[in-house]
Image: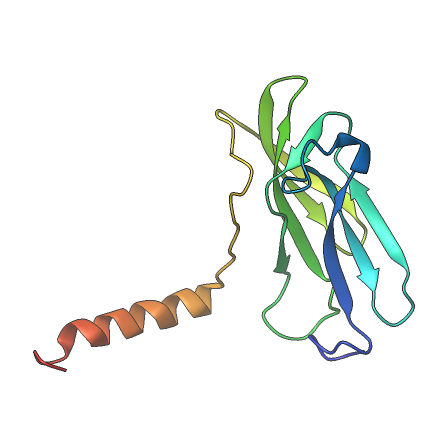
Length: 139
């Protein structure tokens, strides 16, 4: 098993855009995402469907350490222009299949950026914030 993050044997992720749907060279609506095996070049695409576009898909690992590089989930806010609705979809990254979809009460705008923070990382950041508040004035 390759160590996470090694490019020689790793997995890369990219957005997919339908060139026929592009309205401007500066703004490309993403119609899905792809998983690329960096060793073989094999690509698996996940396409949202007609009239559906995302903001920024984000990979969330199943575990903080160990496991395969694609062991986890891809989360994406998807807007359906035809139905006028939005949803959060959760895709199993190894099988590239939808695990869940959550209907949203409002539209998430394009360009909305995703960030995943593990529980351990969040606790660490909170600890740093607490220490900073206790520093004497002038430091």
